[in-house]
Image (tube, rainbow, N blue to C red):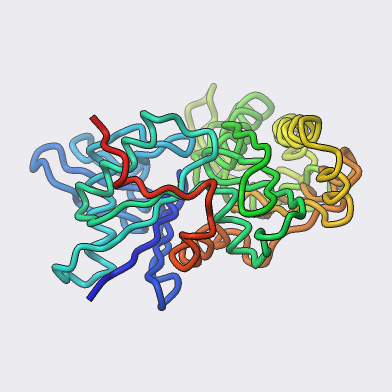
Length: 338
């Protein structure tokens, strides 16, 4: 019996699929570690609840930064825990497909592969995020017809043009969900002299963000600590506040889209005018982003169905297409990493 597991190893969330069953796990990429006992206390949702609330001997960390591994040991421990959760403790060594950003370096690829092998994988395959995102969104990428995808995750945004099962042109930029959250925290600090946590910033982003045409009518009360008084404080903010915080960051993604189009053969650019630009990933849900890209680039822009799960669904489909996906899909066990 063979077990095929697909992992969308995201900076913000890890989504795991099992071939034939679809998505079986979707949890935050957070691990809590007890320094005294030298053991993992919790992973996923349980660990996420601990962020900013633990005694000093327990650390709740996100071991992935900007789409790649920043803490090897913690990532390995986290992947191991998640794989144990989904395979129910079976001793069968799975084949694993892992998703990586399109600009990932050899060193970063190696770290991801080693993390999967140490977690008990029999074979490891890598697939690039733009390919997985398009497959998961139900796009037929086998035709010689250009399709553009902008996959905005927690750590990186991948912009790519895919045709004939391969990536024609791509760029990856470290401007994504986490940077948006940090920009909101910074803006609130500067404007209201109040410090808020990353969870509050994330909530504000989902409920208020509009990077295209804010009206100032959507409001929300947030709580935090006043920097000068050092005391708890609450303040009412509007979507205009969040527009000021995020507009510059959103424009950086627009610039990347333009740069990719500038380097693309004219025939394919013509395809994108008729096919449009597809947004996937959690960042695709940012209010007003499709309109902002469409107005600046001049091509229609739309969000995929259930954009957060697109990459994971694509990873699941990739097992059945390993022969066709020439570019962007590699059998890593053929490499001998020295």
